[in-house]
View 1 (cartoon, rainbow, N blue to C red):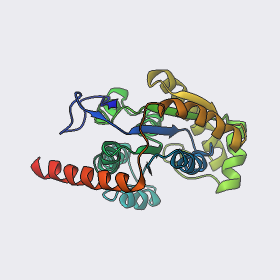
View 2: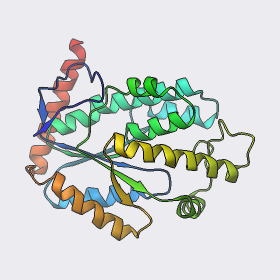
View 3: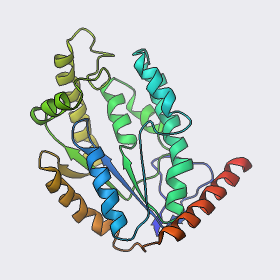
View 4: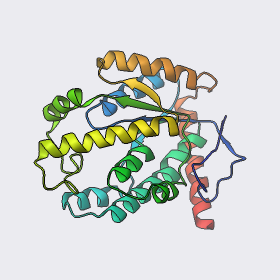
Length: 256
């Protein structure tokens, strides 16, 4: 069982006295470090060990995910709106996806969590106390793996994948630079923020400059320890438990 802990005041309806049978595992890092690839590999590996898996990530909530993506295409979002939008996405997924899955005994794999949002906000000059308070509802994960790669490794990966992105190049506040210069400056600042967060949030650092197989092996060695006291669950039992957890969550929201 995992004790429920939050980074701040927590989420309404949950107390620190409750525990959850599932595990929450986060993969963090900048663009180009291979998070999505590793999430896919880990899902298959965790399922092969007899555990039910739920995966999620930023901008995937039914409530706010599409809205964030549409708004970002316009390149007009301000800092306040952006962070409150992400907070809406996060709390919606926490309430409707993550917590029900943890209640049902699932391993939840999430591609980024609040840390990327906090790091991006700090790079853009957002008040550090305010941004941490905003995400005080977030559940403390069982493990956070920080996939790290330096700029000389990131640049060719990003270029080969899809090129420089407006937001991941920081063009919203570095618009006087070309995309390459902005990307280098923004990602350098972002990496520095992640380094500061490593100790604050107890990240487990993984060298993402290694091969996909080597990164995967590092992750599985660590995650084996996270799952060591967790009971496997059959697909049928997992779905039944998840349905009950979702129903309980809906009742809780209706009672608020």
